[in-house]
Length: 232
Length: 377
Image 1 (cartoon, chains in turn yellow, red):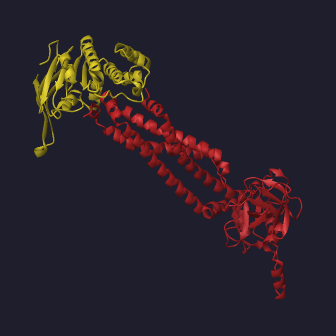
Image 2 (cartoon, chains in turn brown, yellow; image 1 turned 180 degrees about the horizontal axis):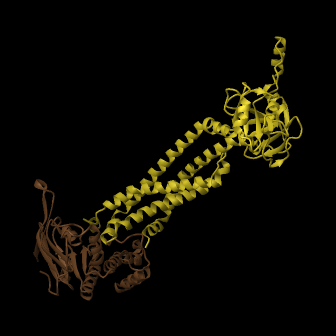
Image 3 (cartoon, rainbow over the protein chains, first blue to last red; image 1 turned 135 degrees about the horizontal axis):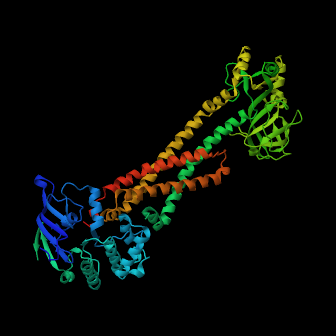
């Protein structure tokens, strides 16, 4: 599944996840198979409790599946060889996260919020700052580079959050309801930005959304119901 | 990028206010240590002032600072003749309450023979006692000036000199007077009592009694040898200067030392609990931010560093403010507050240790934060 465009960056094969055992066992995901290719924006929709968050956590290397195979950018993850610190490094190098409520660190200004990712990756401070400013300019919030998050509008904050997600040039971008807190105009701009990033950086973008006004901006859409994935 | 510094900068007012509260607590700890040091120093000031090597006291007693000791006034002459003794002096000690310009004054009166051992070590203003009667040298804490007259017993004494930091173990400022005057003050009966004694035919008691005789020894003579020679007189006991200081520090002020030590320990525990709670609350406030940091790939050491550095900064700033506060206010304490650099360094080390331990609770909480919480469930 997913649009063609070379080897998939996200590849899930028969991923299942259950919580608890016996009578308390809950099957959050059952036999989920999914591919997301470079340059595509894929939507994941489903009612509350359908397993969207669980799937996002598994792809984001936060939660280990009960069974199945997952490959991110060619690396098989959760094959028993990965330590927690390795998964953290994998997230830092290959995955960018965009959140519903931007989740910018309130004690860092816009530039620092972006540069912090590069700092964690081991960049020199000056290089990290230069790259952060370049990204803010790219996302057209460069004029707000010294503003603290509390002083940013919702749209500006979300763009800074996108800049942070892109800072380390990740191949995979996971966005959790990125437009939920925005009006339709700003939601459209954010989705256009994600598409631009997907195309220009050959990244795979997976968007969890309930926002019908952005459905037409997705290359493909998957429904998750009771832990099972269907192509829409 | 130092996240701890940036977080502090972001909430600078709140952080500094917290540090101020902590500084009051740490300042109290430091002042308690200073009060203890001052207590010891003050207690030893009277015993160290004469610069003696040997204390001759009544047998069966531990000297005039611990209990009553009375020996004949001519003991000094006998002691002076012992081999190795190069100087000796008779001394008396007594606590007295006097009134001056309508105020009650608690004093510690030391009687000594002018020109012999037992007088003040250093006079900071005025002169030493030159006349055999009715002159006094007082500690500055009494608030008397040169030329002031002070009534002690039935006599008035002119203040001719001032000394500094000379107080008894109870904190009463010292007043030096001549031995003869101090014997009158200590042993002379009031006129009605003297008349009664005369009426009942009692022999007039000799007032030539002193509380101790102090001696300075030649450098080549061990104090123990001289003490052994004195102990041959069955009515006398002898203690070295070191033993006399031990009596004061281990016995006379022991309870005060333990009291202050216990109180200081309690304050340190309270400080640790408060720092732990503050750090814990600060961590609770940042749980979502910590989850976000973890999600974007921050290693544990970065998260731990954020919490521990803030804890150490809080302790460091709190300690610095506290030390400044105590240094600035030390002179306003009714008793001497002696702040020693080594005590400050030791407390700084303890505060650093307390901060590290106290941040453990916050670190534990932070390390348990699930990065998934940043995704909003």
